[in-house]
Length: 140
Image (cartoon, rainbow, N blue to C red; front, side, top):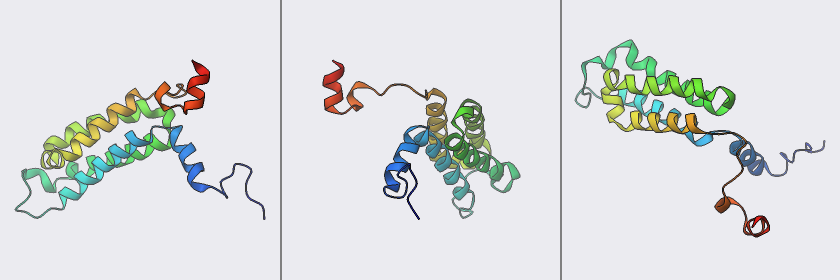
């Protein structure tokens, strides 16, 4: 059996890096981690919980929506604008429903990640400082 023509069999990390650079990977990961952090703070002990809404359904649904939006931002970058708007609204809503947005950390991760996903531009040429030195000198 031969390796695929894309080189995935020989260098899987390079294939993953190429896949990752063609989509808003870091913003989606931030939204996903923010939702996971908020979901984990929902299960904190009673002495740590700050708001009374910790056992409400919205306290569990909104972080799950954030996790799903974070995964969809990475897996379906063409619809990133819709997913980032839903993620920012869910992040802001966790302020009320989920222990002050997971003690601010999860809410801030969700807000920053969804803002980065909203501003991500596909097929933009790399910045000059990100190019290898040989290509930089060739361009200039």
